[in-house]
Image (cartoon, rainbow, N blue to C red):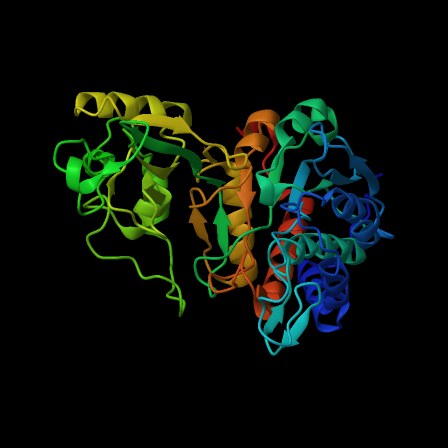
Length: 475
């Protein structure tokens, strides 16, 4: 499939994309996608996930010349992938466009009165519904911008593969095995995903990966049973205090990490520079960084995007709901470490074991946990030619230099695509920090959806104009 006769203009493609928003086409499609309750965290979700790939999403490609395939998940009981492919010329660059069709639990009954997680409710610029931003509303932007480009130019000018998985909210189980199995189908020159919130609603973002996550329990067990506190307090070791002292050896009172091997030895200057140039905004209702907490001498953006963090997710000893007068036999807490590519995830727990032994805590056990599949750290170089091209396109469309974020502060499957396909990974978010993502009352900010259509139409146009890096130059 190829098209050699170009017509139209970049401005025309952008106008067509935003016209799909203005005439209600985008909203009508979003209503249909949101109505499908694709809750991948529910045990009986497979029929809904398959329906989304086979029936709900494919109509968005009607008339666009894409071939639709549904790729079964190698992991039994997990959701499939919908792959829509349009190859115009094998010599042209190929972009793998990512989204996920699954959502977190809808939580009906916990939303504000008058709101339904499976229906889009429009209240001014706020569009409520589960998946409006995470992620149905975002991959819909990419697809409808492709439609606008084909309508304006008559063809894309590049090859497109739209990859929509249905397990991201459960940690993308089976995704790596699927990538290995179907590597030839998924081969591409670059990955562009749409997901997440912007750092500032007034400035577009370009994110280049994710921090990795490692979770584990610290356990101190000194005996089999509790003992009377009056008879045995003061002569039996108290696991709660032992664990507290061990924790104090890991992080200072001011939040500085003390474990050798958890912190980057070196952060590339391109990453530090990107962090220094980020534009952030304060969103009412979201936390404000505590002054003096964390690594001293670093900016907030460096601590979020270029450094390691550790938090305590939960801790327990005894029976907090019904305390008893007893010296407890066990104390336990769960920690989660977020790290960049400058620290290997597989080194986190061994480094902690060495640390605890050196500080006199051999009785503190480290127990790995896997509540869900965790993503590894990933990062595309901010100076990569594809990054420079996409950033320039975004600036041309918006009139503003985008925030180039070395990696997301959270997690996403960037590492799988980088490692299995060898492609630069770029994320373009079209939400904002106050969207209630993952909670009741999730909502999109309509102006950001409309802006996203313009940004993506501009990017697709520029790639089709031949502005993408040549394969020999793409690194």
